[in-house]
Amino acid sequence: MRSLDTEENLSDFIESEVFEDVLAEMKTRYNYILIDTPEIKNNFEAVAVSKYSELMVLVANHRKTLRDDVWNAAQAMEEVYTGPICAVLNCSYDQIRLRSA
Image 1 (tube, rainbow, N blue to C red):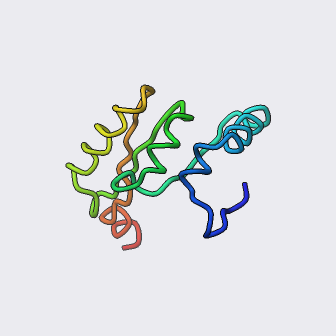
Image 2 (cartoon, helix red, strand yellow):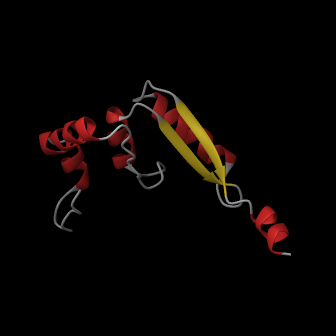
């Protein structure tokens, strides 16, 4: 998929028929489509994309992401998204340090 020009509004693009058509075409070609968005906190685009999702995965960095932020993101998604929500805890630096020792 092409990147957007800086003048284009991403929210408008996600809500457009063009985006829906692109996803419909991709569904005919691929078994899985991954849409990566910025964090949900203060980000409408992540919420807007959720209406096209069959599964949502929240990724949390164990050293940076606060438990309340994960909880709030899941609650925000439940207001607009009815599918399953999974969480992944990412970046275990202690394990990386042990492997390199």
